[in-house]
Amino acid sequence: MQNKIEDVLDKAIGQLNKGKSIHECLSAYPEYAEELAPLLATAQKLQEIHIKKPNMCKLEETMEKVRETAEFMKTQNAARVPSISFNTMIRMSMAAGFMLVTAIGLMSFSSSTLPGDSLYPVKLFCEKIDLDYLTAKNKKAFKHIELADKRLDEVQKVVRTKHIIDGNALHEMHEHTEFALNQADECPDEEVAGFLKRIEQLHRRQIGQLTRTQSDFYAKNTDEIGQSIQLCSDRMDWVQEANQEE
Image (tube, rainbow, N blue to C red; front, top):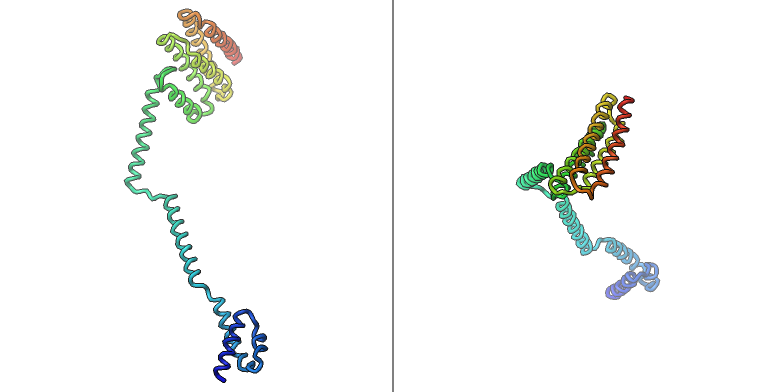
């Protein structure tokens, strides 16, 4: 009898594991229903506990992935924000200082260059930085006068040393002069008279030097120089009228 009930219990539990309900299992063995009922109920509870119990292999795999992800993020953060040693900071400071000294040296050497020289673009770049970022708004008109004067000197030096008229320098001379006139309104009221006097002096100097260049050097450049002289004369007439109004 004992062996019989054990065999029936094994079969009933097998059916229970296959998805049969306790009622269906008991119906298959009605003669053992009274004894099987509490045993199958216990077996079902154990089965539920087993189902809900986490899979330790899967859990271990998940934890391993979490650890790998944490290590990867740590590596990424370390790469993104590298630690800088004291020696590295010293080397970086020395490199920055060297670059600063080099830049100052280039600015110094380029200040005396002429159109066509290798460092002349550096000179123009430094002038632009000075004009755009280091010169006050109400002083830009005076700065343009200064730069127009520099371009005029360069035109004369190129004529003497290379025996040509540098059209780009001549064009920039007129541009700076035009910018100076356009920004005259930015000058403080008490400086307007002084500005107009300086711009008139600039025009007189431009006319005088370009006239000498026209008479002393190449006839083939006389048209370009003649147009420049005429433009300077027209501007000076306007400035003189403005001076009289002042």
